[in-house]
Image (tube, rainbow, N blue to C red; front, side, top):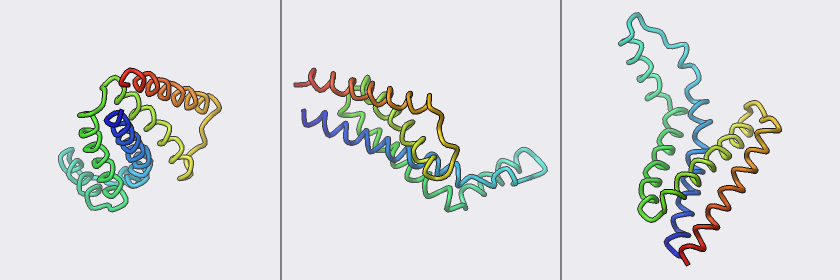
Amino acid sequence: MYVFLESMIYLVLVALLWGVTNPLIKKGASGLENVKANTSYGQFFKEVYFLFTNAKYMTPFLFNQIGSLLYYFALQGADISLAVPVSNSLTFVITAITGWILGEKRAEKNTYIGMILILTGTTLCCWDKMYLIE
């Protein structure tokens, strides 16, 4: 039971890191469309330079990558059939909430219904696995 609970905490933390950083990365990359070069190679390197020298992009990107490392370590003690739905579904919900807080377009009614169904399904998956482990 302890390994299960620890893994779930890590996976929820991963979802928080991924979910919060996704809209921040999008916001930090604004202005990328204004970067222009004469060749496709030049365009590529100018865009990479723009992103890597932009703290508003790199800070959430690095936290997102920390979430990826944590996910890798969480997979060692978690059932893969539970790890993927928990982390990815909660990431979606947290991304939508964070985007709304940051001023992105508010979600439609169907999106909220979907979020409730995602949270219900994730809870049921965790509950099912919890009783299998005991």
